[in-house]
Length: 53
Image 1 (cartoon, rainbow, N blue to C red):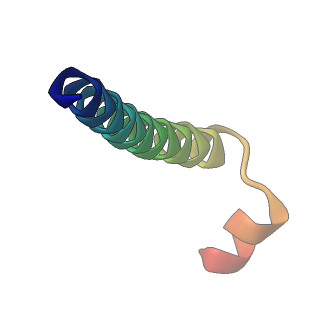
Image 2: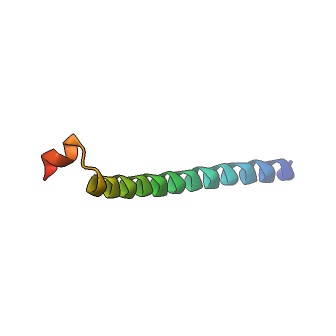
Image 3: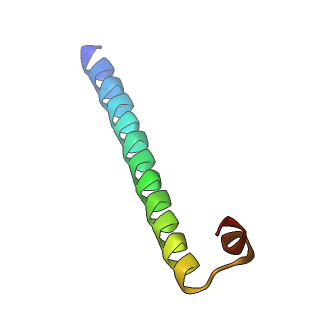
């Protein structure tokens, strides 16, 4: 049935899009957390932060 194949393709494409969107969200979240960590280092330096300077 051609319609069944179409729905299979549609599901595969949507799963792929969800995976790509999840990767983008995770990368943005990692970047945001890194920025927050950098700002916290300026306010309250940790041992690692003191070693770097």
